Length: 446
View (cartoon, rainbow, N blue to C red):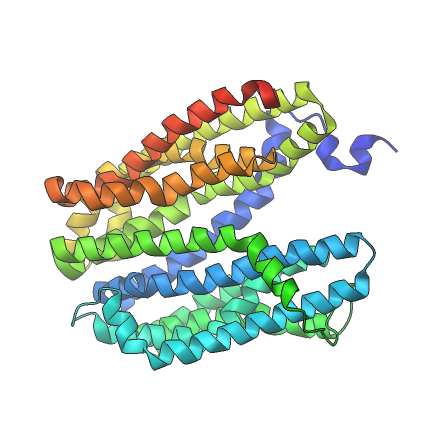
């Protein structure tokens, strides 16, 4: 058996085969982006743009829940996988069970605390009197489903650790489809408004949570539930390992909050609706970069680890050419199609439509720079340089955006809000180029 047959990462990739290898990851990320944005389209089209604004107002709470779940999942997965690799299967099962139970308990605590201080949270996030009732309806239901949200995040990571990544993908797709179907049923057919959107999303959380729990109870894989040992050090280790994921989600929460309060001051509820459209559109369009980076990172890691400098250089070169090409495509799609995207969300609200359409003209330039930043961050992660990767990620998602959001609107008003992301990506790209040049001899990727 050849090395390539043993490990597909050992293949001598060309442009076509490398894109084909990364294609499943790109499709998965694009699908996740699509069903997320479809959720907001239902709300915008069949409820109203104020309901759309309210989703973005309470979004930081969802970011926090996902961040805590991802922190526990990624950090815990590393702990469990290491013990499985060392042959300590029983201990791995105990730790796995403890981590899942801890996630469920944290979810329930969030539900209790969130419902207890619900009104204070909503006002604190910047809701207006008009948006408050929408926010209250949506966040109440989201908090009720918090434990399921935590569980589905945990299982999506732990299915991979258990050697069942396909099951995780299938459940993610089922959850997405269910979300869209129930959105239609609850919002369009039953006229439940924003409550229907929240319930549809909650059912989407429940599908992987319930099926995952049943799967691990049935003991059909080496990793399954057992009676756990209450070892606090395991939870502390898991949290410390995965804390960067929590920081990432918290960064998103803070920047979303800043966008919301800035647009609320400048343009009111319609301004928040417009920035919501742009943020969700950005998430959808950058999934191509994220999926490609996820799909090619293992190839980079393999060639770096095996010392195959020639193939490493070839792979990185292909990746950057592809990223530059797709960046131009996404930029043109956003610039030329911004008006059409705005119309999908705000056809019935002329003011939101005009604000969103004008925003796309400036915001679209961020896509020229973000692709290289996202891939470069993934590249440094693949090369085990977490410091460089984290620096790029932190500056583009939080550092520069926060500075520009706090400074530019004071002088440029709404134009300053639209410029914040493109400028953050541009300044990050300058640093990225410097880091790539600085480390070129250490990793030999050029």
